[in-house]
Length: 493
Image 1 (cartoon, rainbow, N blue to C red):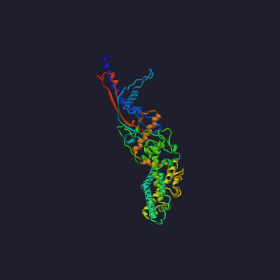
Image 2: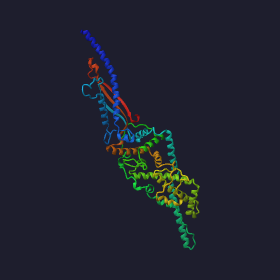
Image 3: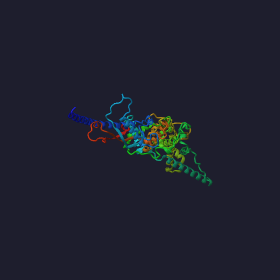
Image 4: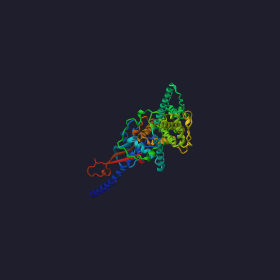
């Protein structure tokens, strides 16, 4: 081989290896890009299993078994997954092959991350909505919204009915006591006085029972009520929460709120439909009230439903001429001696409220037993007579059921819809957190360590390969640098 041939072969080899290196560079670029996404997705594939299994939600636990999140552990996990993919370990000479894309990962930076509790828990809200989006058509949501607003309109129609009843009771007692005292004084003066007729006071009858525990009056078996309770000092709603640095922007219109209610009803129990192995039995009631015990939450919800039923029953009575005549007759018997139309009217309205209140107690018994009650009743499905109000508070009498009426859960839906979104989100995560702690055995699990969305920057480096086979200047310190920014979100999967 001559010197000339050697020089020619060197030049040819230089060109050849330069072309090979030029072809290798985009391959390195593509491999780094693919590996960056693969490693981030692999890290996000390690979602919290119990939350997915029980609640259909995908969150990555950044606490990794500890109380507070540690982004360093996630970075280390992404780096390890990267390095394993870039340079897989092989055993035996058969599995070994030439690796022309030798490179290493050098850095991982978590630029942005969104936690479940960020922005009032809207990250949690968005996933809950997405999980049931295919189950509720828009038209069905509109129908449910009309039902909810119908209940709300009825509730708002009443103008402080219990105040009316209390005022009527005071006025009736004052006027009758005044009349009795007047009669006594006239008798002492030797006058012949017509005694004040003793008649039943429906307002007094109902007022005497109002002070009794509402659950004892409405629940079939008060002794069987749940005695479960939570420690509220360490809840998502009450504690200082960890925060992400990239809150999302989510729509919470009427359709999304209806979907959210569907999610809550599917995944949380209530008095008429409790789930096993939960820290609370009456979960929807907790979402609405947020008190420590099942019984406190149930009692508060029952009082709210009582207010709705009271308004609805007053509305019916006001439209029933026969029953209004009956109420007027009772009022006239009580305070007609005053000759004051204003006092008689006040007594009549007090009797109407008392009558509606007693009927509402029977409504609650039916609702809590799993039945349905018409929102606005008719003469056919009205149950209680004015002469038997005391019977509403003893025994187990219920109202007549209505097939097209509203159930206990329908009233819960109304209250859930108008509850503050942030409170619902936080309280739902309270229950998820405490239930999953029991199921997983991880007492450090926190919903404010759960990531939903993230932006990660991963850096790589690789050294020239083919150019090293032909010395063209000093390339010993040269490296290729690749940097990729990857965004990932469970909402996009």
